[in-house]
Image (cartoon, rainbow, N blue to C red; front, side, top):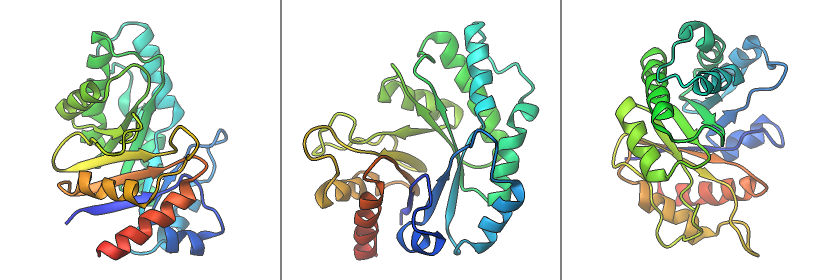
Length: 234
């Protein structure tokens, strides 16, 4: 049976309300590195059994990848343990279920960058022993990024509604872990309805675990919708 982890990237209305609505939280990285590791330990202890924290990688990690990319590097030649240290500490304090890293638009899908992200992915997965969710923005096609991710152990973060065609929801892969972003649609009606949210279940029922990252203006509406569907199915 597929396990779904879904939630937003901030806590609205206090922890008690959040825990009744979502079973996951994507933890952003603040500019001043707060909250502290001690605070994260408190979050972990107070969270319900089975709650999942998904930790964003420290910006330093992405900055290092971009610096290597600008030099045409085909492998992650920086001191990985040192670059990854703060992210690993945060994940450990929270008992995180996954780490998410987003490469920016100017990290283009050329041969050198493909080799670079693959080498990084293998190191990150081996070191962390948990899913590393890769959000590939820019010119990467979902098919190409998914194929590359599968070769190095990364889990592609996929927008199932990117083409605004909710009759055909594509999620790449057939088993293991999947990661989806649900934001908002184009057009007059910006939020997704029950049928569209339910299509996510049909597209992901072959996976063991599915991480759903709810973002944008309608994330709480989508959280309530998804929770209602999940409760009904269970």
